[in-house]
Length: 158
Image (cartoon, rainbow, N blue to C red):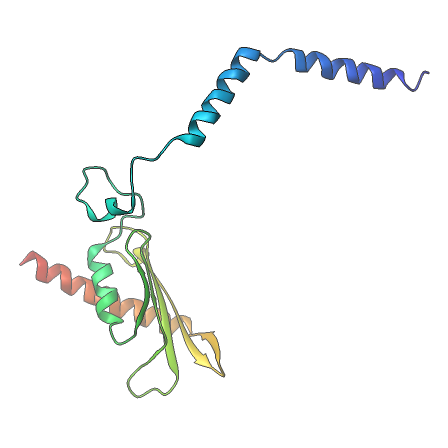
């Protein structure tokens, strides 16, 4: 019987804690949950094409870097382009004079025309597998995109 005493104290303590809950608050929470389940959102897929005064969700990206990325990688087929998240994914293509297929993914992470706003991940196809290119090759591709972005900004300011 001595060993059962802690169990009964624990059980009584749990019952006391459960009794502390406010039934009215629990009812309000349950009602809010039921309403949220049946609530219809006030937006649709067609809102993407409307000129809305509400700001769109997503990462604000640099227009110059975005356009420069598309210009610089125009020799590759595009697989996915998402301006809301700032990601451009190309398909496999060949660089002039190089027989191995090449693919790139570009991440534009901020609206600033800055090297920190751009990340490139490029791959070559070797033996049917995607193999990352060297950091130097990625950096050269980033530099080419940033150079083109600066040209676009200068042309736009004139």
